[in-house]
Amino acid sequence: MLLLLACTGLLDVRQARAPEATEGGGGSGDTAADADTDADTDADIDTEPLILDYPDHRVGMFYLTWHAYAYDAVARLPSSAQLTVEDVIRGGDLQFSDLISDAGLYDAAFAFHWHQEPAIGFYSLYRPRDGEPTPAEPYGAEGYPDTASIAAAHASQLWNAGVDFVYVDLTNLQTNGDFADVLGVRPLEVLLEEWGALRRAGVPTPQVAAWLPLTDVGAAEPIFRAVLDAYDTATPDLILTHDGREVLFVVENASLPISAANRAEVEARGVLPVPMWGNLSEAELNAGRAGWMQPCTTGANFTPFVDPTTPCDQWYTTASPLGTVVSVSRSYQMGYASLPLQASGRRDGLTFQRQMATALAVQPDYLLVNAWNEHIAQPQANPYDASYGALRRSMGVTDAADGSADWLWVDMYGAEFNRDFEPTVEDGGAGYALLQSCLRVYQTGATSCTDGSEACCQLADPLVLVRSVRWAGGTLAGDHVPTLDASEADALAATGYWEEVCNPHYGPPGLCGGGTTGDGPFQLYTTAGSDRVALYRCYSGADHFISGDSACEGRTTERLLGYGSAVPTSAMPRPLTRCYVTDGPHLHWLDGACPAGSNGEAVLAYVR
Image (cartoon, rainbow, N blue to C red; front, side, top):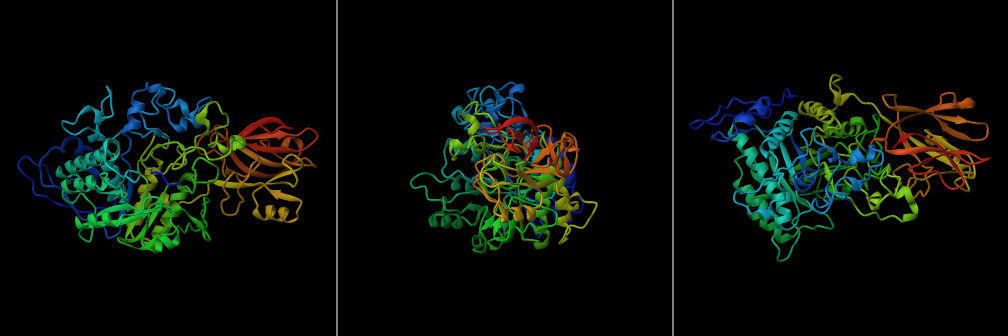
């Protein structure tokens, strides 16, 4: 997608209607808690398919099937070389090119890179159709993975979390052909086949809908026809319906406008098209378009900042073809996720918790959760001038060892700026546990999160913003003041003798943008912890400086600023270096070596 434990209390609203077993059929008494074992043993039993009742307030999950080429590439590598973007951020001399490019697999993977590793291992839902010729199948001697087990695991996890449908992303695929078939159409068919088999075995699964463009493609074959053909052959009750009509989510944005003729063709087949995109304005939402990802807001602006006391207030639609639609995300981005302060990040779950607070208050007809299993992304060309140096690069990439150093990432960056809830090696299932907790609260009909036994209701702010104010007239000319206090920063700037240092490129609400130097704002943890380094604001009598020494190296300690990380991770990827100007001030510098005219003293910690 490119944009610039069993749940107690759920089966009372999502009950299975017992099918009549045919000869040799399985039982109808399976519950969601049985899905893990049933999926491996009963999926081939020929019964009438399970028909389910669903809650009045539906819960859908963004779901990706695009992993075929990325899986094929990583499967060709030895296990020691199966690396992710998170590994690059954490790992010494690694570059993005070390993932697949240096092995000659960049083109074979169609540039898709894994940002994190699923707990069940790298995977794909692609497998060839019976009798399909080899050229349409991307895998070599490695073969395709066990798609039945993957689909069964996902069905069980999603259903047990409280998700009753998924919407499958085909948003960048307009026309049918080998590439679109391998990437999207055939994996969608496999998902429908496997979940259909589970339902025939008496195992509940979420329903399925697709999300794709209806743009005019001229004489080419539009992809929506192949998808609707898959709808036609799906197991009864498996396709998402609304008011008796099957649902198709359709892209609507300036680049991919909806063709009136294609919309009419979809409707003529009895299918309900639901326009949807992300980061939509209030006007676009009020016009009836559904939002798949909507950032928190400050006033009339999107913001990357989230805290426990300020409402998220993400905008939502009340007038879509499905009624009221609220979207919630584990992370979200307004620009490049890999550049400073252009995305929220997960913030130890706080982003999702605050977005869920909106959903609880609204109790929408449809709640859209973002996301389950994207995991992969293609790098984007860097639009910024080379003179920006390290400030034009993804956070934590400081050395231009090769061309990949200038790659940027939009939809995700490592694990922290990744929206997925599927358990991964990196998060150990923490996101999935939070998803279960929040949906348990949501399914009770509560309009606010007050159950202190639920993780969803336990709020803490993991990050603090450090603003940077310097003596006006030049980067190295005078004192630099790191501050947690917006009023202090504003008061200094108001004198005319000081200026606030701007964030590179993008100015989120409350901060200026367009910064071209490395002495700008950054974020720290608010609490101590493993591999965390305390950082203090100090005063020498002539200038302020940052130190890891609580006694400020014999000078005056003014306050604790927060905690950086002793090691780089996607949550804290930017090296914070202290620099010293001979016979002048100390200053901090982000993302690269200290500037000319100063000496680099030490990397104090890694920050955000």
